[in-house]
Amino acid sequence: MRRRIVMSMLAGAALLASTFFGTGAAAAQATAPAGGVPAEFGTDWHDPVTAAPPVDRPHTKSCQVTLAEAQFRDFTPYRGAYTPPKGCGDRWSKVVLRLDGKVKGRQYDRLGYLHVGGVEILRTSTPEPSPDGIEWHVEKDVTRYSDTFRGPQNVEMLIGNVVDDTYTGVIDVKVTLTFYAGRPGAPAPDRVLTLADTPDGTTLTTPRNSERIVAEVYATGSGGGCEEFWYLTVADPASYSCKADHGPYREVQIKVDGRLAGIAAPFPNVWTGGWSNPFLWYVVPGPHAFDVRPLEYDLTPFAGLLDDGRPHRVEVSVVGLPAGQSGWSTPVNVLVWQDAHRAQVTGAVTADKATDVANSSVYTPGTENRVDTGAGHRLTVSGYLDTSHGRVSTTVTRTLANDSTHRWTDGENTDGLDATWTDDETVKTDGRGPARTTHTLRTYTMNGTTTLGTDNRLRTVLTIGDRATAVRQQGGRRLSWSRLDDTYSGDAAYTANVPREQRHAVGTSSERYRLYGPDGCYDRSLATAQGTLTEDRSRC
Image (tube, rainbow, N blue to C red; front, top):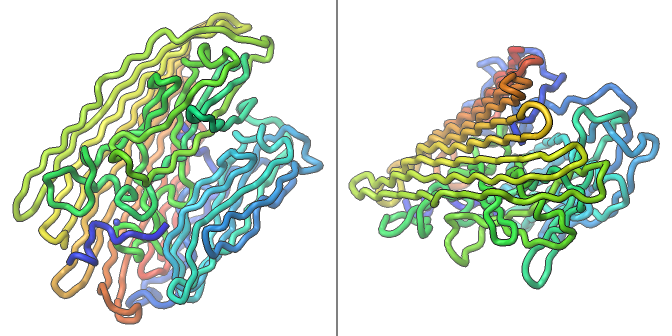
């Protein structure tokens, strides 16, 4: 993924809140005294670290399998084979993926994926290295893919890379799965499916007794072009370098047999070269940069249609992407829970109602050009199933909204964005007993400015927020709740268009990750200066 110079500044003048509480929170500590902070970035810096909690691991017998071990120099995928672990059974309380990586020299940020049996279990990107070299790791709870792990599978992994006389960093990775014996806390899906390629497009065939169906889409705007920074695009006649027919609004839709089945707001991912300033990200990456979170769609209202044993056409599209333009990747997994007491479940879709997509971008030219965007969409789908435990009706309502203000000067020497996205979803299930509802509100924010001064000094100030609240109720009584607030802030500057040793780069960054629920809290803060970790504090 070649890092584009955001906004042309250097050329022309960047699951339900379901990350549960970890037990490995570090004690509060200052990792470097103020006097130990270098005056500017050197040839080495602290290994990348995030404030997100580690995966909570049970205290049971475990077995480990190596999935992949490779060095990525070009765009050749690693291909291998997976064999289930021996000694931990075929039902696990948890399965944890761990990626360990290292790279040194000079290299761009790169985007990668890992497939097991065709199922995407990880989408990731890489940090940019120091000349002396860095190491990093990623952990992810992949218990939901247990069905895939129960039999031998092909493995494919790719982190596309370019190594030459200038970009010398070879990306060295090892990926393992650790299986913990015991019963999972929540039932894992019975089946994990992928879409089949047919002459008519991609199709899905589900088991005939499916009673809950969830699609997940690892949607990323990437490729080094404008769609990597889709939230900054503008429509004609605005005088800006990144164009899109209808401005910056993006929405990822999924359709079943041509009927709109789900909508979602993509997270504004920023990779580790983003916003024209890699010095923002050398130690603390942006939220989800190393573990891209899939968008989830509850397709249970369509289960009555999908359970007929026939293949059904499933399409994913990105609203706002200019026609015929590439730049988005949207691989799909489908998670299925089956009715153990029926060979076939019948039902029907009873309602699917969507508003028109609202999308207004108003361009105001001037000494400071400005585009104000207000956009949104609402979808409600309902359906029922006649299961072994009676008729069950499911209604999914989802409302998306995006408000942003984009300002820039001629030549784009000053370029700023203030944006908020909300994704508000309610899933209501009616059957025997009181109705159950799950309400999840996701809010993403981005506020930043990049400025290139007359002295060729480039400065970026940026804050990114990822917030979510989730509440489960039954019969009006709250069963569970969680609240997440993950905020990254950075301020970095360097002299552009000069050799590395003349950049005189400085930068500070911080991240605070807070997660609250009825069982406790997790609250960790990190702070850095010139590549040195100056704070690592836990408050819970």
